[in-house]
Amino acid sequence: MVINDIKNIFEKIGSYKLRVLKTEDILKWKDNNSSRDHIRSIDFSELLGTMGVVVAAFEYNINSPELPEGCMSISPYYYFSNMYYMKLKEELRDYIYGDEIKILNHTPLKILANISGIGYFGKNSIIHNDEFGSTMFLYALGINEECTWDTISREESDCGDCNLCIEACPMGALDKGYVLNREKCIRYYMLEGREVPEWIGSKMGKRLLGCDICQNACPKNIRTIKMEKMPEYDREIFLIDNYIKNKDKGLKQYINPLSKLIGRNYARTKRVLYQCEIISKNE
Ligand code: SF4
Ligand code: SF4
Image 1: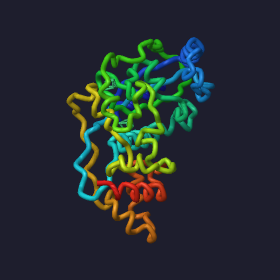
Image 2: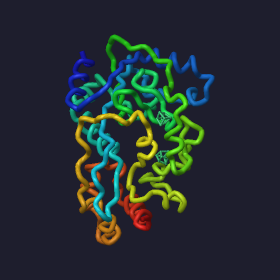
Image 3: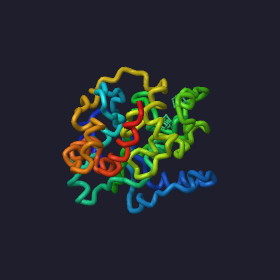
């Protein structure tokens, strides 16, 4: 049974939570809730041809190593998600090529995590649960065999009266609660090829990728984490000046190792350089 093989592979990656939903139930849930705009517009076309979906959350450690002087930071999420994604791709290779499973890269994972019961939506628009807080990497696979299916959960959130993430966001990007105003969120402008307005750039601090302010404010993330932190920052790779001073000489010596840490999609030379030029002006 492919589901047992998947579980064995997930065990090798680390601490995880898993649910299995029937595709028919997911599509029925969408139909039943289609009076709500954000649900009606969900694209589940990637699920065509699948019998079910394995939804998983892998825990990561949100605590960062100390940032060396003059260096730029990355959120541990990007380090762990890149590592987990690459490991899973490698481990699942035979199943993918054998058409037994498909990695769902374009299906909204937060919705799947919520309706599968893996976690609740926080007012910071991130999924959390009692085991992992909001420090989880979400992943989903389409499968084509009968399973013991989990039922669709109806609980969307357990935030109650808490507003700590909303109050903590320095940009007011969460003021509506549960809905992220992307145009105001620092992360939206990082390494995405977008022009960065001055009022956003000046709030980036020394961040290259990721802003964990709203997650660090969340009481769900106050817990003992047993797993290791991301590795110490390598000064050569993260020193901002290395990029600015060597911009005309080629930056491969820094970009290649950086891409191993955060993935090629993010570590694009022009974007990293642009971001370095912005954050080098910040205190
Ligand atoms: S990531 Fe940062 S800027 Fe974006 S909503 Fe959270 S605290 Fe605000
Ligand atoms: S800080 Fe409070 S409101 Fe925000 S996600 Fe966490 S529990 Fe919910």
